[in-house]
Amino acid sequence: MAQCTQVQPDLDFVREIRAAGGETLKKCYQCATCSVACPLSPANNPYPRKEMVWASWGLKDKLMSDVDLWLCHNCGNCADLCPRGARPADLMAAARNMVYKNLTSPSLIGKWMSSIKGLPFLIAIPALLWFFVWAVRSGIKGSWFPRAADGRIVFGEIFYGDYTIDPIFIITFFGALYILYRGTMKLLKRFKPEGSILMLGSIKPWYMHLWDVLVEEVVTHKKFQDCGAGKADRKIGHMAVFYSFVILAAVTAIVAGGHWVGKVIPALDVHTPMHLTFPVKILANIGAVGLFVGLVLMTLRRMKLDPKFQASSFYDCYLLGVIWAVAVTGLLSQLFRLMDCVTWAFSVYYLHLVAVWMLFAYLPWSKLGHFVYRVAALTYVRTIGRR
Image 1: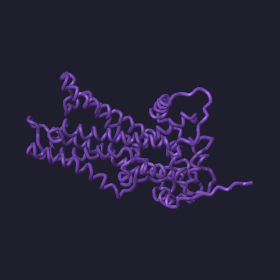
Image 2: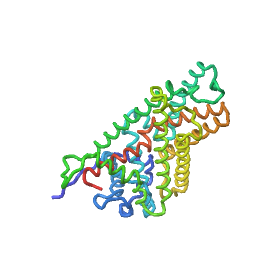
Image 3: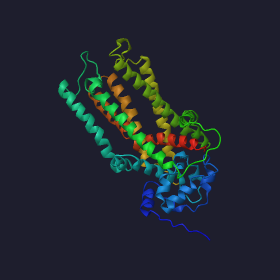
Image 4: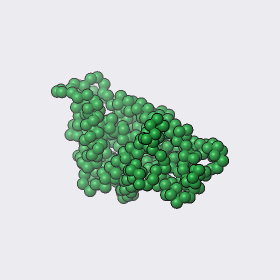
């Protein structure tokens, strides 16, 4: 006797995911071209066809706990070849966006991050924070645009590292990491199926699988290469931004470490602003150039996307916009300082602090957090014997 399973569709979820970027969802008629076209989709339980079914039927729980959402690298091959223009890649991206929105607390940040309507609130928080710091310090120094005793422009005259920059960014960064950690654990818990998994053969611990993912996929960006020919600019752009971030993070660590360790061991002290010929400054400028190159490639690629096949979401535009703001304000603040334009230098540096704070504080709800969630998903599928 045949058994029937009753499906209870969540129609609000269908409307929400269409509004989040999956508006072409209903064009899908399940031909499976997308799963065949995807160079990364496994032969067993392939995607994105099943995700299109679940989204159409309003099966929210299944889609939100689907590990394959994070294995998709959004190359767009499925959308290019879809005979109905259903844009499966956009549906996968929209579903991931919905996971960001609701994965961690405070949920209000996730709501603001999901639409351009929330952007003023996202900007207002760091803008008011750093303006308060500026106002208090200017009262102490007697000027909004003070100079050092020797006449130089030194941003620390207002945004003093020991009492403003370092404490605020340490709390922001590690707070975001903690929220991201909680979100990652919650996501991994969603992935786990009911019951137990039978593993045959030798089993490696999860941290060895994590190491394999970092070496084989993150360092080389191999999956971007596997996404198909004719899209090399995507891999190069992402790698340029990624390695530039690594360089700039190393520079930040060296400067912060030199500053604090230098209080105990004066020989290791790193003074700022650094001279342009100082090795750490050279490394920082190399990172800045690489960041601009990567941003240009990524932005040009986004501009060339044909909306009939693939579109950019607010999450894409937000992350690109914030990184552009960090890069441009960082460069301009340095140039204005070298040009001795004190008013412009401090004003642009203030905007730089706002942009950097936004980049890190909202990390768990942005596509930057997506990087961590994807690494977690890739590690998870390896631990259960799936590649």
